[in-house]
Image (cartoon, rainbow, N blue to C red; front, side, top):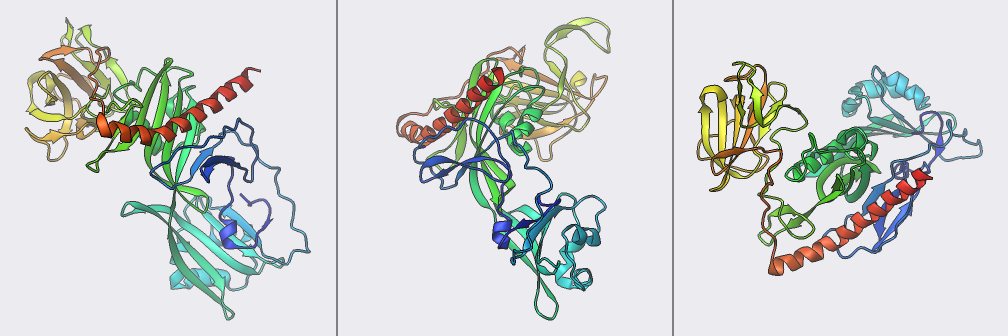
Length: 459
């Protein structure tokens, strides 16, 4: 962020804590506002959330930002503290080019970085990663840091790793360091314009969280065909940061998606047995309900009902829905159940049939191969991998033929009203209401921000 200029900074810790946007976060029980190196305009809602089961600060990153003029003013000669420069590695960069952009004029440094065994990580210059250096007015090095691994998951936690280089009187010393990333709770909101991923990218939401959104509400919303322009979403999720940079994500904690004017909600709740699951805000479990589709982000090539068979050229009843997708696309079970049949079956080719209870079963046909270890009688969970898209049996190209059966009779999976899971009761419901209370406030605050955006845009 300082590539075109320099910025006075007294320490490495402060140099790595700069933010680029406005954030909302929790301090002393209140949602507060901070401004980083950019300025932005939007509504600010101040609430006092209830107790939560996490001490993680809550952050809301505003999407619209205005950059300060570039380049930054040159440092004044009166400063006697180091000047911190930061640059991002570009494709084709060399160590010499990076040191030049960082304004480091230190004899012997490049040779040291090239040959010292403790500085090996600097030989792998990965585009997009950051290098930071502090220099005096003559370009002599105070310290240099290469953030080669902003975040990597190790044993259920995210860890940041970097290389530090400093003068030691007779030369230089290089040392690898690591630190556990800090957990936070982030809030974000957005609206659909062209696609879900485009909307979440604009809102600054990581793809991993977007994928969770589709997994969690897959039984309520068909993300292939149900989305409409101006659909809105609000999400609260776990994030892991190091020196102000997001390095990883955890799970979604609360989610609201307004689809065609109807709100769909989900919140994570840990049960008394230690296992957690998603529920709507009224305590109805989302687990056990059916996902609308077994594939993610594909297209429907043939719907339920009468059609002209592509191979036999005769009008016949099509008892499922076909989803066109590349060969090898993963297929997932749409609900918990037991494998009733796995193998080859006439026109279906390689097929898996899953029994969910005494009324419901699903069928997945034309697979190229089955998931490893899957066999008849095996228990499967909702969203579990069961096979891969192919073109076996009577198929003109790779696709999934999906059937939803009620008491053995195929029905249209796109229009049937899917089963709803049970609701929490008694002490569990009371615990749930206590847990969900702050998330309700977070979602309401995001809704207020969205309403403010709409009012501003309509003026």
